[in-house]
Length: 59
Image (cartoon, rainbow, N blue to C red; front, side):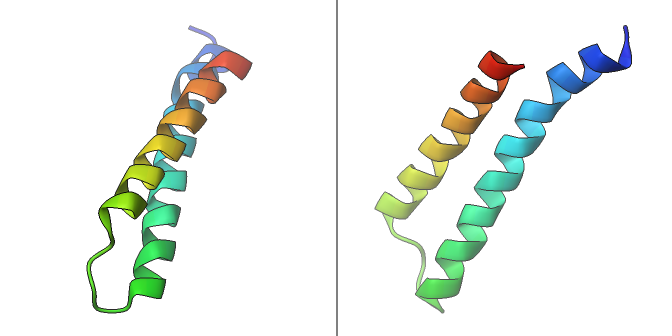
């Protein structure tokens, strides 16, 4: 397999994971010591799945 194929296969999941963790850290920063809400968990999950899907569509 060529390097371009590996990039097309691995880049979208890595970007979705990075966005998911960034969103989680951002939500935790504003919640301080309280757990994040169910709405924040749902939004973080949906946005990361959106980035994953759009990444595969674009690449």
